[in-house]
Length: 469
Image (tube, rainbow, N blue to C red; front, side, top):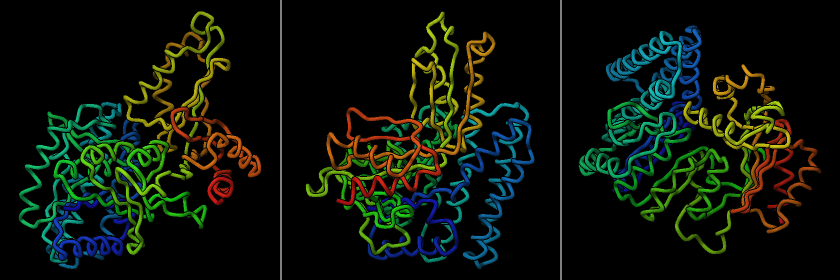
């Protein structure tokens, strides 16, 4: 059995969806049992979350614009894929019901004037549902028996909305009971990724990129032979090929190496993706929809010794920095205190905002946070709310936001103890302005926050210095 997870690139237009259908059909025709896990169209999740946040501030115009865009982006694809009038109208009716759910959520948020992680999850889950309905129709039109299964039916989680943790035993039991009869009947389940539900059936999400995690949870529950992540890249590369055309694909990685790359910030993997697979020794294969002829990257327990050391430069643009500084007289004259950092980080976690990295300085009495630019405005609001007492007392000096920035991490580059000086020398030659730096003690990697405009030159310089020997 193969669990295939298709990312946003695979559903971005009608041509890509046809390619997806062909991949699944080839596997089914070859005798494989297949489970499909789908993602939302690119940027739709951000669009939906942004609509809810805007509604909480009273801006229903933004929410209505998001509604129209959600409908139009999917309808354009459907009109090119689904030629039968009855099938198309049935699909549109199902989408219209999802839009009614969107309207109910937005009205509730606007009435309360408050946007919570719970409401964010409820609206964000609609993106995968739109795509799942479309894929099930497209597969059936290609003579592949398929049935849509909502991820909420399978993945049972705690109540940490925005970044929920699955309950493994209950999830495995649900997945087996719901999916195995379909697989045994040669029906392809099309599962909405990224989403789950609490025991009380409240919608949750598994965090950004959580569709990959959905796929591996399902694979572990079904004891699948392999998970294939179909993406827009040919595996995990030594750098972003758009920036470094000569970047090489890493043929094999261990679970631990791939997990560290994901944790540092690589969008190709969700940080928790590998845990269910490692426990059952299920291989993960990352492949490109654009180049299915390429071997991609395989993640296994024990990779080829000649290729076991991960060597990569991971980059994440569109980062915003938020710096919080307090008066030297704060906290009884102690200035910055860890308690303030704990309070801010806890507030952001509860609000469902992912903090990519942070650093605190006792000498400068400050905390520096890196978040995605799409979360920056909301993060700023939540930080202000958590530090209201300090603002009223005058202890809060400033909350400053700086954008755009980028995160660049060097993971297990050659050079051993000389990694830091060689990396810094390369960045000096590239004239990159470093805003913050973190050197991992337990692992051999460096992370840099820099101006976004310097990212390309910095990555090319680091690749030449560390990876082109």
